[in-house]
Figure 1 (cartoon, rainbow over the protein chains, first blue to last red):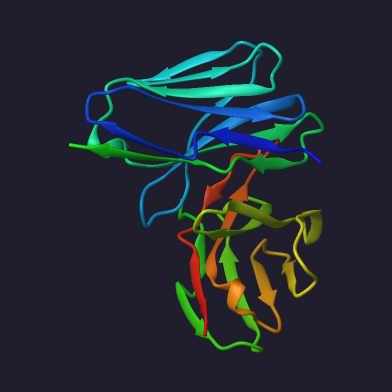
Figure 2: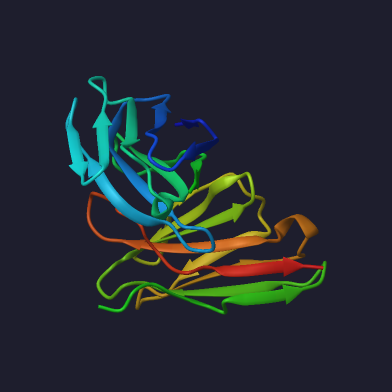
Length: 111
Length: 112
């Protein structure tokens, strides 16, 4: 079945440093979604990428979808303490009927 | 629009008991998915219901079951509880082909 791997599992950064998490799927995806879960909270949808090679930005966050539609990344520039949480990617299968979450990357930011 | 509502928020049960969790999706959303979240295990997919039919199923034992009603509300049942079932159970509703998940706040189940 479809597998989605996410690395790293944990990342500690100093406030102001950059952060990147990577997501790789075992199969070609229809789209990829990113979610953020704050400590004690529930996952909240951030963005969806659909096109091969697509790049989208949300303020300090940059999302990329690979050319082969099998990998994606989330990059945060100049992290802030408000960025703390776990970031999940989720890949939608080409058939469009199965959404698989990656294991998440837990980001910790030292002020 | 009101968000996804899960009840109860917290539950304490003992081994061998059974439990039923409830989820009310966003109005108009016909798909409801359930996930189990434990520390270090990420989001484990349990099952998805669409129009009262189970559309997808994860790799969980038969003790975990669910159903969906005609108003799209969904329930999840776990029978013969084990200590390892202690987790946050999240429900998410979605609409349309993009399958964007809108999560509820979850039910935290503790099995003693």
